[in-house]
Structures are given as C-alpha cells and as structure tokens.
Image 1: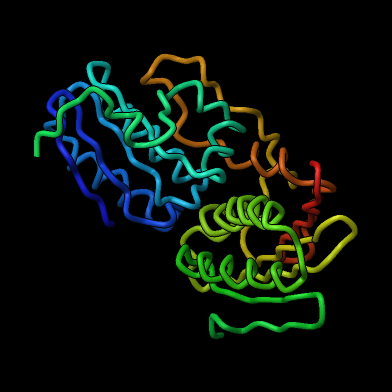
Image 2: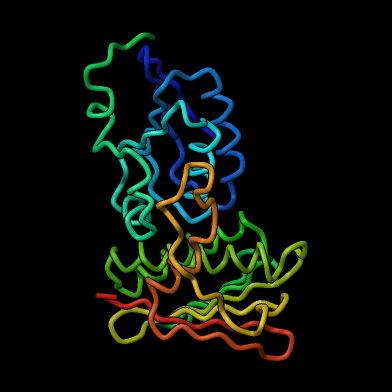
Length: 114
Length: 150
C-alpha cells in the first residue's frame, strides 16, 4: 500500500499512490490510512488524484476510515477522477464527505508544515 | 488451471479463473482489453468494469467463500448498443435462488451508523440491463447487458 503524508498544521493530506482501491487491497488500505492518521489534527484530506478505480469494497473502506477518525475529525476527499466520482454520486456517498475539486483547493489557506 | 486460460473467438472472450481477489484484477484487465478490441467506448468500459468487479467480488466473497479452488468463468461479447457478460461459478447458490434487491444505502445516518457495505448490488442493478440469475446443477449463472444510456 503506497501512501504519502504531508502536514499542514490543522490538516494532513494523505496521497493514495495506488491506481485501484478494490477488494484485493481494501482492508490493507483501511488499516494503513488509520495508522497514518492516528495522530492527525481536525482535518484529514485524502488525495485520490491517482485512484482510477474504486469498487464497493474500496468505498466501504473509505467510509470505515471516516468512522474510525471519530466525530472530532473529518475525512475530506480531493481530486476524484471521473470514474471514482461516479461511484460516490451513484451511491449518494458524495453527500457524506466534503469533496474538493483538487488538492490545492483542499489546502488553500493552510501553511505547509513539512 | 492457469489464470491465463482464456479463449478469444472473434467478438467474444471466455476466461476461466480461480476465485481469488488478485485473479479478479487480472480478469478485469483482460476483459477491458477485449472490450477495447470490440470497439466499445471508454465510458462503457468504465461502467462494465465497475459492474463486473462487483459481480466477481461477490462470487469470491460469498458463493466461493473459503473455496480458493472454486472456478469462475466469464464470457463477454458484443451485443446491440454495448456488450453482454455471463458469469458462471461452481460455488454456493444465491440464498432463495434469487439476486439481492440492491436497495440504495442509507446515507442520511449518524456517522457511526453509515454503511460500510451493501453498495455492490445497488451498483449492479443500477448499471445493467436484462440482469438474470439461474442455478444450473451445481453452477450459478448470471447474465447482463451493459449498454449506452442506462
């Protein structure tokens, strides 16, 4: 599982360096993001720019991560590719997450801390 | 049986795989390639891959649960407006011998009550046409069409 973390003070951004979040890696994805976001501040931004395919197991894993972060911290999504965006729209999960057009929109106004 | 056991007969591809998530990835890769060769649009590929991933994952996780030696057979070919897929497997029958209803997931719930699953059948039902299921001897058979303007 290839993930990269950047810190922005009150937010962190986790970039998913995988073309697919599917049933083959959904559990690993969930565990890895949870580990990486363990000490995260109020906002956790998941950069999905490189993710070209998300199946329902992958979608379930993204929801699970948000639930694990608890009510005090929010999981936000950035850079959904058209195929991935369609999955969120069809399942109406786009109403559950704050979704940013791209990573710069997600972190505008925040200072890079690392 | 080798994972590359596939046959390409004109505008039709038949593949046989073992029920394993990594083999599902490979099966999807080969199928996308076949659809491209059929001349289907990339929108149709994307829809087809989404549906087929859900169908094959369901076979691996339910019908063939705990049976990595289980067989999954996929046939796909051109059809008017797009393509058809037929998925057969020698695993357990669908409960009640019918496909799940695939209701949309409840999204207006409290954070901790949000669903982490149950999206798959909704996606399959929303994105396919002419979806059928039958139990034939010790095999399941599902068939559906992916066409433009679902």
